[in-house]
Image (cartoon, rainbow, N blue to C red; front, side):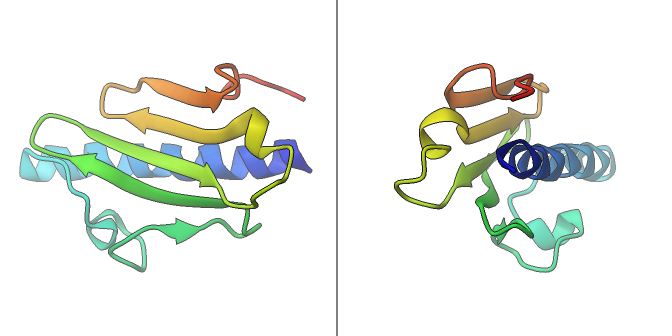
Length: 105
């Protein structure tokens, strides 16, 4: 179940990254407004499993950062793959476990 929730968060971040690149090609800048990226709300959203909150946290003409944060306090998963990040340079990070983008278990 944890792997499915992680995959859902990573898929949301990859969708944001793809939509950011499309937006950049048309506007020569990135955006923090999620509606301009095709999402229903200007601010972040909660994944369908309700386990991660996803949002674009920073953006400017040269880069953006999007994050997914695990939102069930006290759950052991928060201490494994509690945060995923992706930016406009396709740098992927996770915390506290730095291998969560590739983790299979």
